[in-house]
Length: 107
Image (cartoon, rainbow, N blue to C red; front, side, top):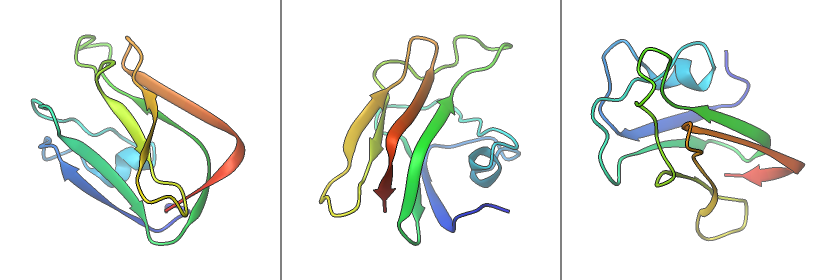
């Protein structure tokens, strides 16, 4: 079971066997079908959480070119800020890894 209550929203079609909850929990992955500009995955929490970091990996060894590149970004909405801000872009290997020095309160 996940430690925080959240819901997710997708504007990204995926395979029927891939679900967002198991991807969030690190148990499986979400396999998108032909993503296009302005597609997104949104995680929204029912209550404010203290975020210490996160990892997003794209692609896999069988399909090394199926990755999100530097044009994709991670937006974070901090508590008391009106809009989300960009906190990271994907590396050339399709990965984002962020660790915060202090927990960040996010909505």
